[in-house]
Image 1 (cartoon, rainbow, N blue to C red):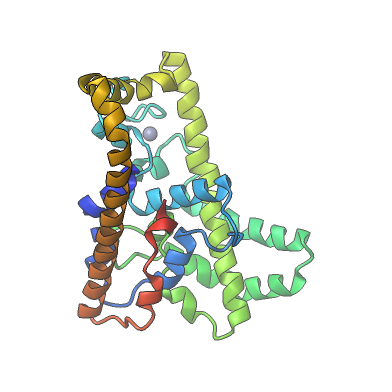
Image 2 (cartoon, rainbow, N blue to C red):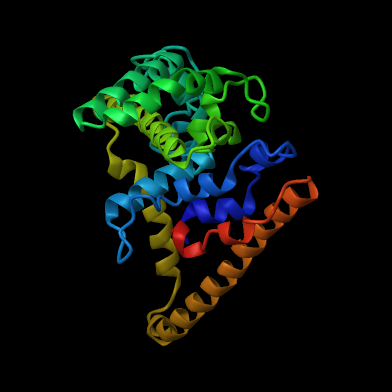
Length: 295
Ligand SMILES: [Zn+2]
């Protein structure tokens, strides 16, 4: 089972988003649609790119990107410590730190503002002049919403909600026109992507470069895990192995079923929590992501 799935069930990683969610602050339908990456889905099959992107989005939601902090907690022994190797600030490389590290080429506010003009350029390049007019009517409001303080992530701006992939309900109230809302959402997606490209992806390249200098190879990072698996395998006798193959398959199916059940309960409990907190649940049942969507 993928690690993050376990962590959805076993951790409190979403609590910061849910705990104060009594004001209908977030639009969870849009958020879950975005995170499951349905917008670019072809119906038949999702490409590995889609799957990767979805995994990235889920990991942001859970603050579970493979930062040094996360890797250290997973016992990766090639790491000396959990400190950020990009800056000399002696800071633990947490999910939060990645976005504000001194080594980033620009800060969050700068990237936000530049993204808006980049998005306009993008529309321009595609001959979408009507959409540019719509964007110009809303761009200041979009920036304002994002730069204001989050009511949920205390002490942070709403940019941090976006970094988690959570769509604030305020964007829905900027306009009554569906067409305009589409552009606002497209702009929101565009900015999200810019944060990924300009911070996370560059961070990964830079960390890879520095690790190479330090002689840490990816293989080392995986070493411990592999060793453990090997230990386990050596513990089993060969006869048992062949005997158990079939049963294992069945067990796995059973486990998967159990897991599906669990994840449904977890999601349901969250939504029930939202109802108890006074939120409208009308749509929520449709929203419950199928566990297969979260692979
Ligand atoms: Zn740093």
